[in-house]
Image (cartoon, rainbow, N blue to C red; front, side, top):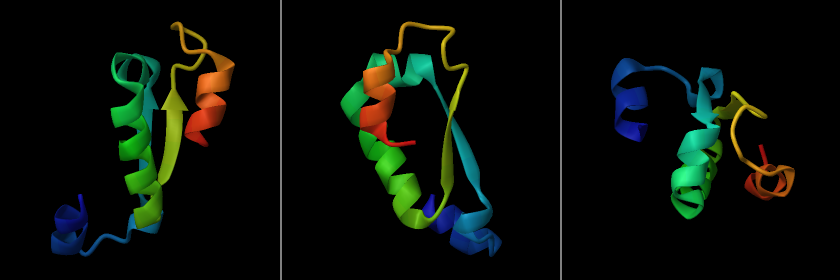
Length: 65
């Protein structure tokens, strides 16, 4: 992602990435790492379709959206 943003001269602070519940449920640790990496770049991260699947509120709090 860093390379794509640099190549396109697009500031990460203008990027918003949506993460679905199913992505988080498949592998919570991988999702946490991806979310933390995007936030470290300065991108906003949103949880898409929250409440539709099985994601518990405590897990979404742990991911710190």
